[in-house]
Image (cartoon, rainbow, N blue to C red; front, side, top):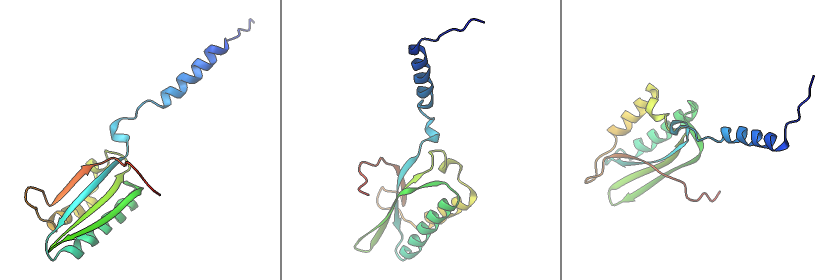
Length: 135
């Protein structure tokens, strides 16, 4: 039996290729997706909107649809108009496209509690990128 010696450069190259294959970009649907959700609350529905946002977060967490951080819910009041902004990250970009009925029901409730403001829809979702995180 003849024993062959593999040159060290081939071993290093093989290890490098193995590592590189694990770094190949994941399909977009598998990447986390951070979103900013803006809700323009109808007058008199402000407390309900806040409750629905909290229920949405709790439900999405329970169903393992989101990442724990970042998560931030903000409220702005200008005159008689109240807006809410929620920033959260879906576990991956495909999650909201295949949301279970329980989440879709919450989304329908959100849509009933908001109003259009000028040309801006009552509920707007934008994909965002985190620039800084001061935690």
